[in-house]
Length: 155
Image 1: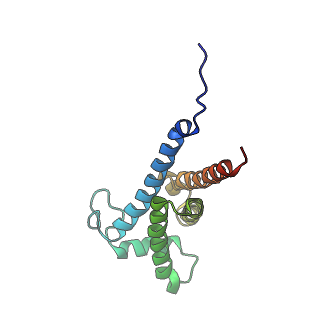
Image 2: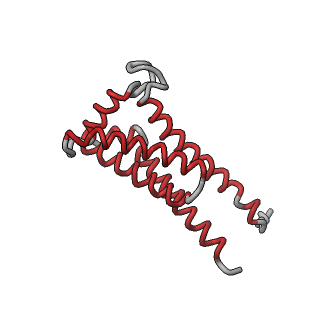
Image 3: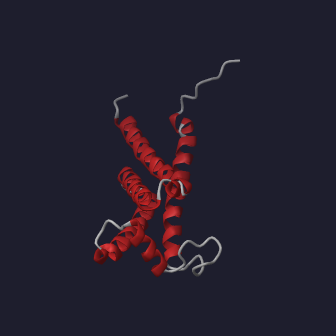
């Protein structure tokens, strides 16, 4: 029995569109969950499943990761990362300039992963799938580029 090729591009692309949405939602949820944890929305420090539970423990963690930076600017780096995560989550969910937001997400996660390796060793970013998230973000950006090129090519 031979498999028939579905020539309807809308039907053929449905699994890809569904996977793209799942990836966008998963990345945005990860960013927003981390931000919520910093402000105690998942529970106080020490609660099961809570990484920080408040801003101060997160600030201490961010300071550890950014040990290369002068101590005076480490709080600004923590705020910058937090704001970037909220903006990236919104961009991934809204979908405006999705290729740019996906690439920026990959860059941010890559930076996080490298700073985690420098401060904590290779195991933590692997355990938290930081590079998996970065690779998924870059794949989303590349897929969006291919989708844009496909729709703009002459028939």
